[in-house]
Image (cartoon, rainbow, N blue to C red; front, top):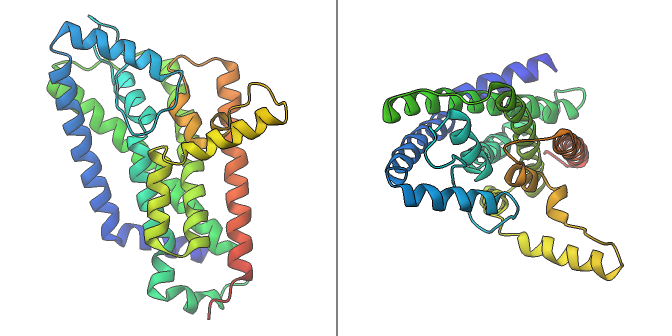
Length: 280
């Protein structure tokens, strides 16, 4: 198991796509901050964005929107920028793109055939990938935090982090949700074994393109007399998008439970498929 982890860790840092994803991610953060600075130069736009952010916190829409929750006249904090990008799933998009690339790299190259028969338990192959993707998610989140802080200081002329207790809670919960999302996409990539379809599925999840399926399930629940059931509230992407900036105990518990459940389900399905699949 340790050797498999070392191999995957080496493979991650030697993969060019890692640095390409991070580079594009950094450029997006810079571009997003520049656009935000332009928008917040006018009071009317500030008020409109603030009202939109309040409405968006109560609904899940198709597409990706990065809208700051900053009140008009107040300074933009790093927490505001972090919240807007996480809620809009801009961060999730880059995490799942790399998750697909990394999860299927050894399958595409045929390397999995060489090591599949050498490990005592194939589950270690899945657990190793899961640990590496967890590490990648953590590094990406901290990279985002650092770059956003530099951008805020550079473009706005000040650096204000926001309420640190709320920020830490939101950061930790968002990290857990993104790890769960990476595990879901990893499982899908392993099961499907096709980069194009796996990538398309990941992007559709980020863009809420399968929202129509959620709506259908809601109607089924209503038909069997289950009141106030909204399937999106029990999904990882739904939690990422609808988690409020000021969380209470119920918000934290429900998001944590959803994350843990999906992580376990993803690992179980991935492990089962790898165990049963013929690697020759």
